[in-house]
Structures are given as C-alpha cells and as structure tokens.
Amino acid sequence: MSELLKERSQMDPAFEWDLSTLFRNDEAWKNAFEQLDESIQEAGKYQGTLKDAESIKAYLSWEEGTDRKLMNVFEYANLRHSEDTRDAKAQSMYARAYGKAVQLQAATAFAIPEILSLSEETLEQIIADPLLKDHEHLLKDLLRKKAHTLSADEESLLAQFGEALAAPSEAATNLMDADLLFDSVKDSEGKIHEVTGSSYIPLQMSNDRTLRKNAFDSYYRSYRQHITTFSSTYSGTVKAAVTEAKVRHYGSSREMSMSEDNIPVSVYDSLIESVHANMDKMYRYVRLRKRLLKLDELHYYDLYAPLVSGDDRKYTYEQAQQMVLDAVAPLGNEYVERVRQAYKDHWMDVYPSKGKTGGAFSSGTYDSNPFILLNFSGSLDSVSTIAHEMGHSQHTWLTNHNQPSWYSGYTMFVAEVASTVNENLLIEQLLQKEDDPKRRLQLLNQYLEGFKGTVYRQTMFAEFEKEAHAMAERGESLDSTSLSSLYLNLIKLYFGEDLVIDDAVQYEWARIPHFYRPFYVYVYATGYSTAAALSEGILKEGEPAAKRYLEFLSMGSSRYPLDELKHAGVDLTTPEPINRALAKFERVLMDAEQTADKLGL
Image (cartoon, helix red, strand yellow):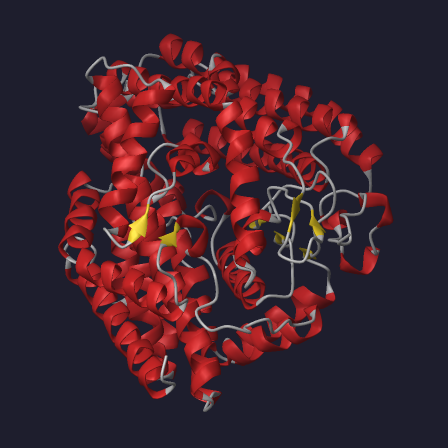
C-alpha cells in the first residue's frame, strides 16, 4: 500500500508554520479573545456623534485598533482550524472568532449610515479636512456607495444576520474538508492509493491512466451521493446574495459584488466574450493532448495527465525553495531576500496531513508576517504553487509596510496578479534553461495548463456563476438537476468535441469552494491575463518594469484596482489584455506543437 497521511501530531515541526507572530499559544489567544468584548462595547459611545472631521477621525482610530485586535484573533483561529478541520477545539475557536467578527460588524453598523446621512456638501467639506487626509480615498469611496447604504437600523439588522447567512458556506466547507469520504483506489499494478481532497489532483496528474480513472470515479461518486446537499448549500448562498442586492437597490447580485471594487460589469462580460472568441485555441490544445497521450478517446480524467510519458520528476522541498528564489530574481534583490526570510521564519505549513485543509492559500494580518498553507507533493505543480502563494504573501508584506492598516487589504481583483506573475516567471526561467525537447515539452505543458486552468477554466466558472445567479433572479430553481445541467453544457462549450464527457463531470461544480464567495472566480482570469502582460514586460524591460510592478504591489487598497493596474501598465477596461494573454497562449501552444513534431510524437 502507498504511505497513508499522517496525523498532525506526527508531522515534523520543521515543516510547519510558526504562528507565534500572532499568539504564543492557544492560551494567549484565549486571553485576547476574552478582551475583545470590552473593545467592541466601546462602539456605542461613538453612535450619534459622527458629524464632523474630529468625531469621525476619533471613530476611525478606535475602529482601526479594534479591527486589528479582532483580525489577529480570527486569523489565528482560522489557521489552527486549517491544520486539522476535524479538531473540535480548533472548530470551536474558529466558530467563536467568527461570531465575534459578526458581533463587531453589528456593533459598528451604525457608522457608515450615520456618516452618509450628512448632506453631500457637509461630507465633501469633511473629506477635504486635513485631519482626514490619510482617509480621503476611504471616505470618497463611502460617498460613492451612498445610494446603496441602508439606514443605521437596517444595516445593524443585516449585520446580525451575517453569521446565519454564512451557514451554507460553512456547511459546504465542513462537508468537503471534514465529512466527505472517498474510497481508496488501485492503480494498474494493484497498489492502493488514498483519495482525499488534497490528493485528488496529484492523482489526476499521474501517468497511470487506471489510477486516474479510478480516482476520478471514487471522487465524484462521493460528490454525487451528496449532490442534493451541495445544491441546497449553494442555492442558499446565491439567494442570500440576490436578496441583499435587491435590498441595497442594485440591478443584480453581480453588479453589487463588482461595485465593491468599483468595477463595471462590462469588464466581466468582456472577459467571457474574449474567451468565447478564442475557444478555437482551447480546442487545439485538447486535440494536442489527445494526440500526445495517444488516446482513441480523451476523457475528463486525462486533462491533467503529463503530455509526455515518463514525466515523473519529483523535487524536494529544498529544491523547490531554490527554484522559486531563482525565478523571482528579476524582481530585485530585496524581493529575493524577503522570500528567503519567509523560508527561514517558517511562514509555510508544507506537507499534507489528515484533516488538513486541501489546496493552498496565503493569509495573515497587519501585525503578523504572512502565512502560507501548502500540500506539497514534490511535483512541478507543487513548486509552482509555492511561487504562486509566495506572490500573495509578498503582496501582503509590501502593502503592510507601505500603507496604513485601513489600506492594507488589497482587493481580490488585483490579488491574483502577484501570484501569477511569480508562476509565469518560474516557467519562463525553466524554459530558458531547458534544451532537451522532451523536457521542454513537459514545461510547455505546465505553461499551457496555467492558461487552461486560470483563463479558460475560471472564465467557465465565472459564466456558471453569472447564469446561476441570473436563474435565481428570474425565480428559477437551483436544484441539483438544473445546476448540473448548466455545468455540463459549459464543459461541452469550453472543451469541444474531442473530449468525451463522462457523466460524473456534471457534479464538479459542487467541489468549487470559491462559488460560495459570489463573483470571485473571474478575478483569476483577469489577474492571469494581467500577469501575462506584466511578466513579459519585466523580463523584456527589466528594472523599470519591475519598479512599476513593485509600486503597484505596495498600493494596497489606497486606489481603485483598475487605476492601480493602469499604473502598472495594464488597462482592463478594454479587451486588449485578455486578447494579449490568449495570443500568448497560442504562441506557447504553437511551441508545444512544433516541439512535439521534432520528437516525432
């Protein structure tokens, strides 16, 4: 049998993150948690006073301090919960911290409506006061949202429902990460492999087709058994968003979501239109995959398989660390040294273990260093994941060290740029060094997979969300049949006739946790397209392009995201960045096709 996952207690601490920059231990966290009530209760003394620059400044100073205390408490609980989602103590810590966040949201719900109840003339005078110069963009953004802000009582009531409205997402997450079980499977030699949320994609990347198919069948068999529950949880999330949009006088839940970052819905629509216009390139890639794998039929469980037989190279974690350091060298010595410090200071939790949250993420607070959760398997994809999450963490570090806390939380619209630039720099650096045609084709496969998974696939997800929310807004049912049918039709559209559509594919939507954060996934596609342009510019232009890029990473949320990207050199109000990214995809695809010809494949 293959080696089974270890319990958290059996893991080597040398490869676990160090949470002491948040709290020394659980007892210190408990003490900080218990002190939050006193801070939150102070909110009441500001209610009814927010009428001039001095009072608003005082409130904002209190809010900043309380927010920072709460975020430290919440983040520690979140990270502890991520270590082992089965752990009852960690579950309790997370639930209590989440409840406290809802409590603070409810306690401060009066503030924005109270400020916005002032006349526009008074607000403009307050915003212009030098006392609030550091908050100017924040206050102007509040003024922009005035038409969609409810009364103080209504905002308070809505805030108190926050925890209840998040219940569908919590239920789905717990079902995916803790309760959903998968049958172990055999490979072509009869060896047993454990199937989990974190092992599924690595199994799908195996050269062993029998293993891929068996893992695929096992994985989606479990999702199918719970598809009615997943339909209910997702429907609850969609209905909550649709209802809030109506209450706040938005035209749709999509408009409400995108308005938060001042992004017009035309950017979303333009992305889908551009990808539809370039679907022929994806179909070419599917045909190339079928050709190189020498298959009569290409199935969904073949989409992650290496294009060249024998691509089983594995990297140690130490090798992966150095590969990332080499890749980010074009960003300058200071950036490289910060990455090196992240390794030294244990920002990362490296290996999978039982109950650990699957996938990867970067997180942290204004007062701590960033933290990275990994499930490192030694594959090139795992190396790329380190580069990706380190991009997020360096973005966080730069904003925290260049902006006040209220501007440190950069928006999701720009978040995926930093991560994908690092991924692109990694693959370009590896391609530059590689002369062997077979190995080069393997790397081109990795590059193509990035485009497939991030531009095409995430746009497909975005189209699923767009239509699912529109269905709810039209009063249509979001049951397992309608959602699975919608998803199946999109699979057919995005992958073309050369892919055999297995029945189980229609249930894949249920395993996408990002759907529980409405209209989030599209930023992966816009972010990747932006990153394709920026990484090429950095490699071609050098230091001036790197300087503009690092300035962009340092802006946090001090400007609107479209304006920040324009500073870096990309204008997403036009289709040009998406079209440039897909033109890059075609060039990489052509390189792969020509390399395959040289190899006689």
